[in-house]
Amino acid sequence: MFRLALRTATTVTQPAVRAFSTTPTLLKISAGELNARAKQLGLELPPKAPMGAYAEFFRELYPKIRENYVKENGKIDSHEVARFTGAKWNALSESDKKPYEELSKRATEKYKSDYKRYYESLSEDQVHSLGLDSPALKGLKKSARNAVNRKARGQPAKPSGSFFVFMHDFRKSDELKEMMERDGVEKAQRSIYAAKKAGEKWGVMSDEEKKQWVDKNEEARATYAEWKAQNA
Image (cartoon, rainbow, N blue to C red; front, side, top):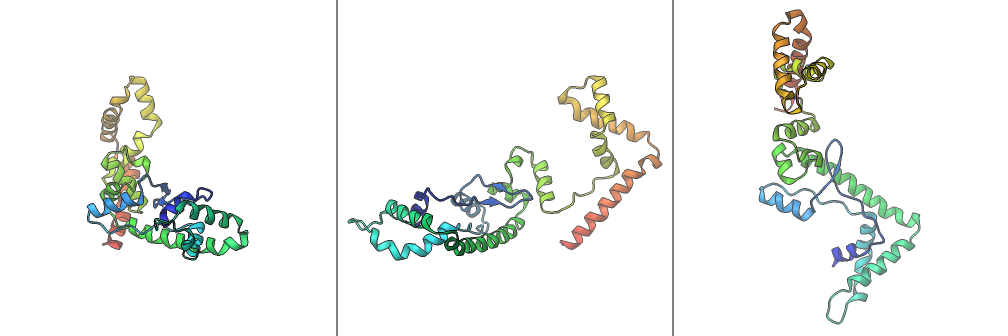
């Protein structure tokens, strides 16, 4: 009855629940579905979402008025409860609403902390299976999705070698763009073309010319080793 009455009170706007990430995104699944997925995967259930200020007010008021709205069949008239509590809430002054807003604010801060801890306890695959990654990730391949999730967790990428550091920069260079335009490379062939041209260019470079990418790779290796030691 409590949940039904809250849904019926349409005059009150409830805060949206957001998933934790570097840029919070609206959840696209209900709390019930999320809990069901967690149970199916054998995972701990996520923390419950906080209540809004109106919900805090309703929780306090409902026990006091419940008996006034019992119908002849013994059920609560949820529509009338919602209408009454909504009107009472809207009649409150801003100062009268403030205690409930403070309760909601504290609950929200605790929820954010608990949810962040829960989210960071999950692997990339678990995040995806639960549907907690951002909508932008859903169409990505597993490798790309994992890379984005690693970045969100503050995990540095595992070093892949000096050549690949160079190729990463080369793919974004104006030089490669001009070469593709000159050779009329179609979109579907750009990755293969870029890899081939990067290999050719790397093969004729001197050690001095390669040094900046060798240094970048060594720096990445040191950063990754430090992170791994801290999170062992």
